[in-house]
Length: 131
Image 1 (tube, rainbow, N blue to C red):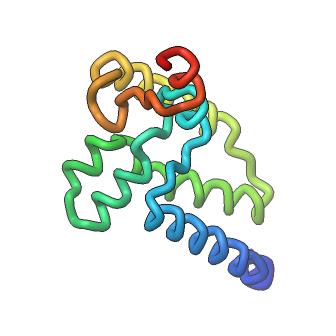
Image 2: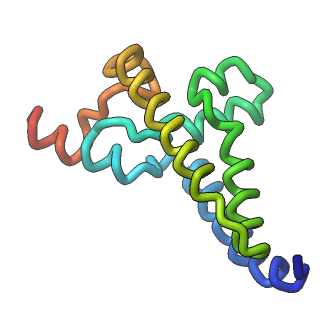
């Protein structure tokens, strides 16, 4: 793996990190799906999970999103596939299936009253349906 190729992407990742941290500190809802529909998306609670993890509350992190440890794994797979020309199609399909099943289970047991799976009545759809 050529380290020069990785180094040229560092400013981009740092810029993304700064923007995300700013939005988190400004308490802006990052999820466009939730802002439009009011429904939680399959990754709903992921940000809250990492915030809980960084605060040392591991149990709450797993409650907010039980698959949050997979994000670094997915990032590593993406980097490896980019620079080593390996493809992990079956792995991505399996991970997508795992996220989907987890989403369905969480929707059954947590929606609509338990954060992060509560309904957002202030969403665009929520304001139309529930004026």
